[in-house]
Amino acid sequence: MSMHLFHHITVFSLNEEEKGAFLEAGVEFTRTMQTSQGETATFEIGEDDRQYERVAALLKSLGTERVQDFSMTVPTLREFVKKMVAGGGERLKQEAAMQAQWERGREVLRQSVELLKSGKREEARKLLDPAIAEAIRFDHSGWALILCRHAAVISRLMGDRERQIHYEEQALAFAPDYSFAAYNFAQLLLSDGQLLRAEHYAAEAYRQSIPQTTGDDRDLIAAILRQWPNVAQIV
View 1 (cartoon, rainbow, N blue to C red):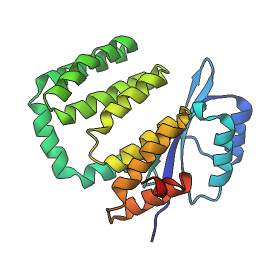
View 2 (view 1 turned 45 degrees about the vertical axis):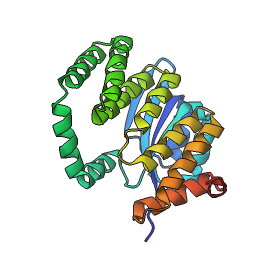
View 3 (view 1 turned 180 degrees about the vertical axis):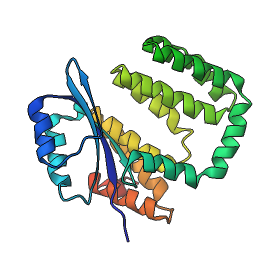
């Protein structure tokens, strides 16, 4: 049986009226945070949920710049991470062994996290750039992925969408599950209004998934075609 995709949604700058509309639609927020521009709220919803279309319409009404959507094949982000770890146990062991050999990567990540904890976000991000370049140059692919994604998270926290996109694009080359990574990158581009680039990466995700036979890949193909019905012609 085909499995519907689930969405880990973050909505920015919610006012009370907008928040009430989501609650009325049956959304259960897993986390909320008050900011000077309103509330930032996170929730998860499956495409087979009877309220999904209503929630999707509410999200669309807010505008793409206020919504971040991470698509998954399991109900929660925690389960998604658990699934990825369980499915790639041997690969993760190999990466861990490789990462342990590059002390500089570990030290730079530790320093960046410490700076981030003390609120020095820009310093935490800048520290990563030389290490990312070095990781790429010396083929420390696991560390390149980790550092790029860490830099992307910092950029998102800073509200710097341009840099977030830059780091996420760098990370793509090292993603172990490229088709899913390309699909989620396409969603990020879409939220930034970069429609042509988003379609390009959606086509890449589709192209990579077509030869695969797992249920997850079939679900991904279906999700891509729902959002970009012409992508098969591009490929």
